[in-house]
Image (cartoon, rainbow, N blue to C red; front, top):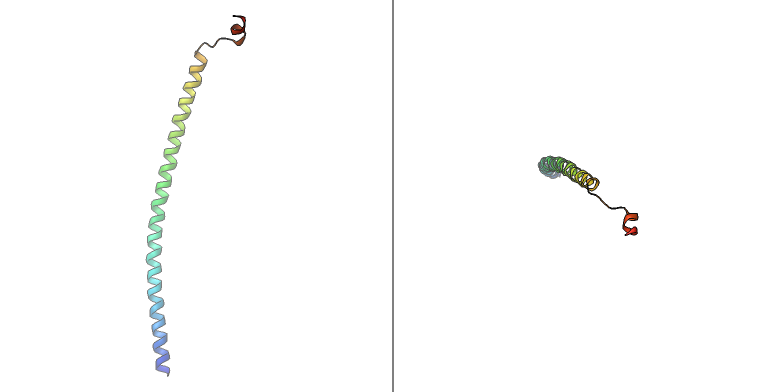
Amino acid sequence: MELEQLETLESRIQEMVEFIKRLKSEKAQLEATLGRREEEFQSLHEERGKVRLRIEALVGKLDHLEKDVCVPDEEALIEE
């Protein structure tokens, strides 16, 4: 009877060891995936910043262009 209990305990311990090995492997894979995702996020964040700067520059050019273009007064249009 004690031998059977010892064998059962040994079997359960072996199952737990294998389970822990699988968990460690999965953890390593998830950490690697997380690292790649963090790099992708950083890259996209930097790209977004560059796009924002370019858009701001274009809007600035449009504002400057708008100021340079002669736009008749509404009153001048009404007088005609």
